[in-house]
Image (cartoon, rainbow, N blue to C red; front, side, top):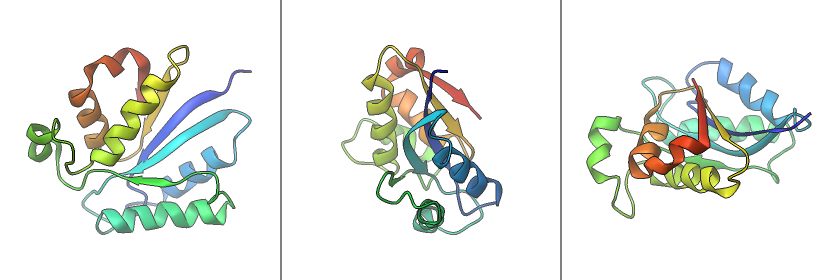
Length: 140
C-alpha cells in the first residue's frame, strides 16, 4: 500500500474535530506521510498563536514534537491578503511557502492538502503559484 503525502491545514483551536484529525494523521504513519501542519485563524478559538498552540499540544500528546512542527498561516481573509501575495512576507506567507515547497518537492506523487479550516492558506498558495494546481489534491 502506498503512503499518501498529506499536508494538514487546520484551525485547531476552533472545534474538537481538528484535534482528532491531527492525532489520526500523526499516529497513522504506515498510511500517511505527514509533510506539515499549517494553521489559520477562524472566528473562534483565539488568534493564530492560539490555533498553533492547540495543534502543538496535540502533537506533544502524541509524542511527535520532534518529528513535526506547526507553521503559522493566515489570520485575515483571502480578500484582505490576496493583493500582497507576491510580497516576500505577508499574512500567512510561512504556510503558503510551505504548501508551495511541498507541492513541488515530489513531482511523481500528488500532495493531498487536507483543509479542515477555512481555505485561505490554500487559496493564497494557488494565487501565488498556480503551477501547484496539477501537483495537489485539496480535500476540504
